[in-house]
Length: 177
Image 1: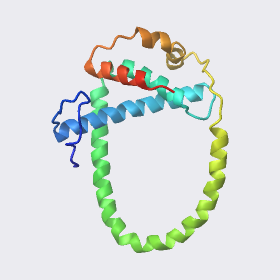
Image 2: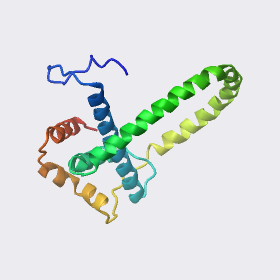
Image 3: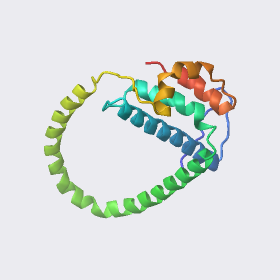
C-alpha cells in the first residue's frame, strides 16, 4: 500500500497505525459517506427536487452521525465494503496490464474525444441552470424526512458518547454553508 507516515491525529500526537487499521478506517469513512449520500438522494426525491444540495448533505451527515455507531451491522457492512475495495483493486491491477496492451488503440480514440468536448460545453450551460434549483423541505411523513425536518432539535439534544461520535459531531458542527 502507500506510505501513511504523514498522517497525524490532529492533536499533535503521532499515531502509528497498521495497514489493517488504516483499511478499516477507510472502509468506515466510506460507509459513512455512502449512507449519507443515499439518505440525501432519498430526501431530495421525497422533496420533489432533482439536485442534492450542500444543505442536504450536511443534514444527512448529522442524521448518519447520530445513528452510525448505533447500527448493529455497521462493522459487518464496513468489512464487506473493505472486501469489495480489495476485490476492485485486484480487478484494476488486472485491467492495468490489459491497458498497457491497448495503449496504441487509445490514440485513435483521442480524435473522437475532441468532438465530445464541444458537446460538454453545452452540457455545462445546462448544469448551471440546474444548480439554481430552490431548496424545498420534504413534506413526506417517512422517518428520514421527519428527522430532517426536526433536525436542529435532535442535533442540539444529541449527546455523543463514543470518541467517534464526539469527533463526528465536532467536525460536522465546523462545516458551515
